[in-house]
View 1 (spheres, rainbow, N blue to C red):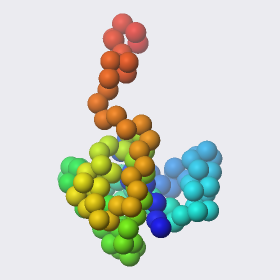
View 2 (tube, one colour):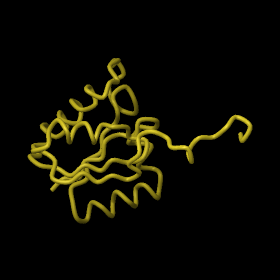
View 3 (tube, rainbow, N blue to C red):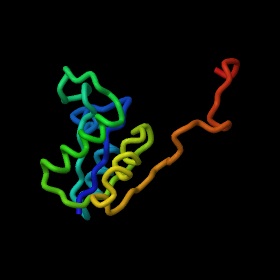
View 4 (spheres, one colour):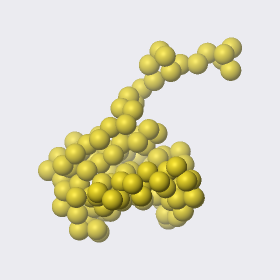
Amino acid sequence: MALIIPPILVSSHLELEWQIVSRRAVYEGLAHGVRVVRYDCRGMGMSQRDMIDFSVDAAIEDLEAVRSRLGIERLSLLRMPSSGDVAFAYAAKYPDRVANLIIWEGHTVADDRDKVRADQI
């Protein structure tokens, strides 16, 4: 089984991410039990720079291209904080390809506790 972790949208750069000791340790720990797949968001990190479509639909197709290229039939998806709605949208579009959808911080809209007033900054 493969665990695919879609890009964190605000900081997608795999080469630099691998240098973060704590994150590298998590990925290495996960890799003892499953095949861990990470990839850069289009237009960021080590991906092509000429991509201008940053829509959820484009991100779904990027994830699908990764899955297809690696020959993975069914996968587990880990939705990380700040990775947007790609995992949710992919699972909705391709439910037969998703064995598990793991959600870490599943809210997509800030609730009242997350709002910060300008005078609090």
